[in-house]
Length: 110
Image (cartoon, rainbow, N blue to C red; front, side, top):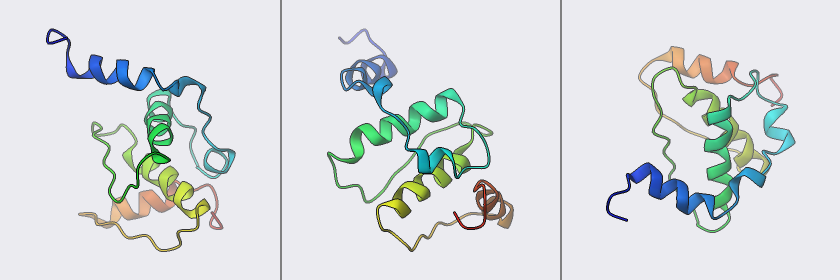
């Protein structure tokens, strides 16, 4: 056990929960302007695997530059909106990130 790397231990733990069988909801996929990449789908599936079991108040994805964090955030906003949340606030260091997040939605009524 101590010879395994953290990502291997996490993969084993999350693998037990059958994340590959989890489907990303239609309302998320259909309201994003871009198709999710495989690793983005996997990140969202981890979220869905754990979202019912714990009361989340904070959420963090550790992803590299250019990996689509704003698209993931747009997907999570869609999911929260579907659950009844209507007010969202997030802080960014530039208006370009805010505009990019808006653009990640497929239409202005999302």
